Length: 105
Image (cartoon, rainbow, N blue to C red):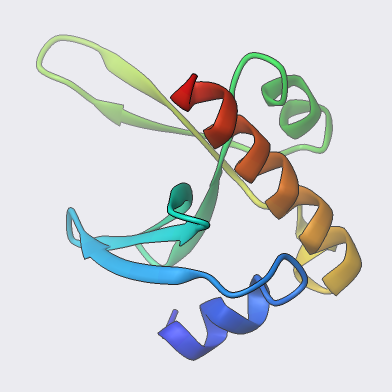
């Protein structure tokens, strides 16, 4: 996904900063990482409080294979319906931002 498309996707939250990282992109809001782009997919940050909402919405948690076992990362796919609804996308992006704030404490 190009940077303009990412900016458009997060427009309901506000301006985001996009930085290249790990062969993908980190997406930041107010200096906090809120999402990643991995293999052309945007993944939103979640934590213990917000992950159940992502799971209930049918989202997939990002998992990669470590040296000896699969590793679950605190990033989840975006609900399909949010990709077509800017207001809903803004709500999910806010959840990701709130998870980043909690993680920083």
